[in-house]
Length: 236
Image 1 (tube, rainbow, N blue to C red):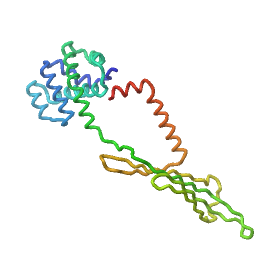
Image 2 (image 1 turned 90 degrees about the vertical axis):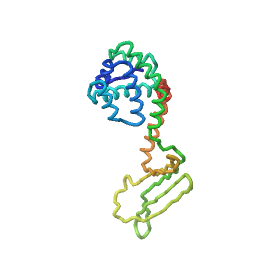
Image 3 (image 1 turned 45 degrees about the horizontal axis):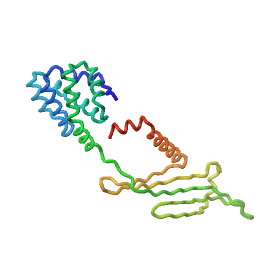
């Protein structure tokens, strides 16, 4: 798997051949510090005075090197793929070997930093669901004509399972008999986030829920393909 470097990143990295190997190694150290603690303008200004260049040039060089090391570590590309990725930059063989060594020496630490920076997403604990169906009904009476009303039926499953049916009269203003069946699915998700329980309540219609289930099943099938398995192995 090769890195796809933009023209901007190539331009930032073009500064590296202008300095000696010790400076490039120092830039690699600054790049790791950049990931851990963020940007430090004073470091760029100090390095710029020593190299007799602008601080922006130093900053762009460090940011370009940071991107190179971060993306390589994130994808866990092989030594050969890393060399092929930087080959297009036109650097000397000595500089390419130095960049490869920077990658091999720091990729484990970079991946550790990236994992710490990633937000902790909620994890699933349990769920409750309820299906509500509203159906229009008409009842013929011998002397009083027709009575109009609706049936609201509810079926739930979770902490408290229950089934309930309610009959309610309706005013005769409800004249249309079409599309009067109104099902709704309510889902209550119980999640864990940072050790604290949280809940999310969602509501949708059965057709949308069915479509969502189909998309998730399709995604699970896609995860079983060889391509996805290779991607997952590179991410871990």
